[in-house]
Image (cartoon, rainbow over all chains, first blue to last red; front, side, top):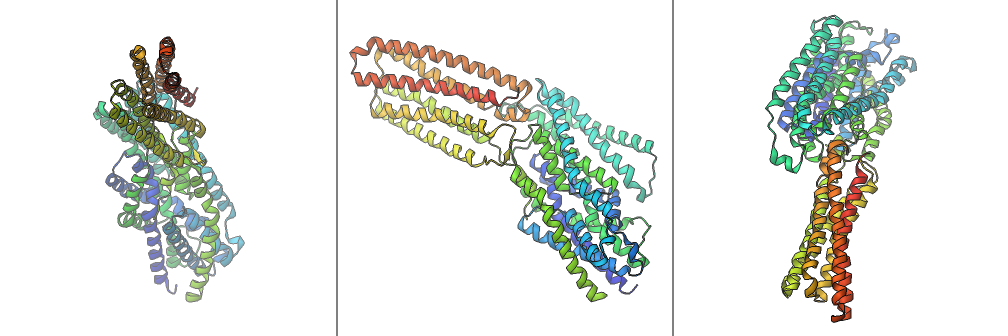
Length: 416
Length: 224
């Protein structure tokens, strides 16, 4: 194909920029509850984010990448003109990247997922035709945007209610926290590893049966829970701090759990959001290399590595400043709440990642926070901010679409 | 770049509520010093106490404004906004009452008649104790928030509120005694002074009443 190196070069550059943007901006949202509850330091948060965003992207980012690459657009009508899809995917990356840049500079709560999905739908409708969009798949994705905050909210509500019932409302909360928190650690580690094993590891050459997946996940969960138990046993009651806040030591036990859920949240975020950057890249590369649209080959691992690295670089160059400010802004979010919100959100997100559905990490986490709030867990939630976050996709999708259409015609005029 | 998840969390009213209550209690406690000074005929001491009380009342006002400012109607909270504001009002009344009493004592150079001095000082002390108990209860607010206003912590606060009620009952009984004492000697005193003495006795009792009301408001916050 003519210009194929240029196409691949442009795609890689745009995709890296998007990945950089995710690392610079979105990771802070995923880490906000961990940093805000002071369970981990900023430095620890950065290390956790770097390691687990990267491993989430590489190990479990494949399914959503597949959806972005070829699930939204039905490319069968493009057999004769595969270049159109290249222009479209490049345009989608440019559109989403530009819109996110504008929005994040103004502090608008805009989701990367909504931007890229809106952009792909936009260029497909105008550049190819209404039939080119897999409306069934798009319908399922949009439905999941409503369902994912709800599911996360319900999970977090149940998690936090169980914590209240088992630990916080009891006369001996510290004894009970030491006893029950390892089980929550097990749950977090188990869910994360199960979804990863089911869906993620095929492209790294590991193919396990369902039973093996469960056994390995249970084993992994037990190991992590035991390590957590060691740390929990080491926590000495701080009588002085308890005088001021009676649940001081109890919350320190939850801090151990919070380290695990922070890892889970970063992992989940990486697994779902890396696709927003590299899904279009994967599409462009396979068309440019093979000259055909109906790609059967799985997403190659080096593209996922590229996305994971882009996120880490974004985190290191810019995201760390954003994360640092989060800690100072959130007050009075104790680890017993933060973990419930994170585990509910992370579980929902990895399930979506496993089924290949691109969802908004931020919306899911906000849903989870509301769930904890419903269980009387959070001293104040600003519903006007929540409303703005939830409504943002209504404006993001048309803007992403229109920008993608503009870039699509520009690219077509240059290369076409 | 702004991080919008952090904006989802509104500012917690707990710490300023506790600071507010602390200022109110300290104003009530200062009344004791003030009456001791007036009994000792130390009017510069009374003036100093008055200044302290006015400053504490202003401090409480600042916290009150801060709390009201950070509780917009768009907040979703584990307790009704109205209940919190009612609790704040009751707390604030303690500082206001202390300020009113200190104003009367200083401007009228009030003297407590010798026959009721001991009873009167005990009465003031007990009312300040009620305010202290109210402060102790309000100090449990962060624990109440952490437990979702349920369970063992809620039971603990209810026990504190019971103690508070007991102290308030005592102040009521003491008020009757002090009034009876004043009645026995009132004919020997200038009538206008007597009128204002009854008024001060009543106002001091309000500190206990308001403390009791703080207990009631806290009970309303508990989940049943």
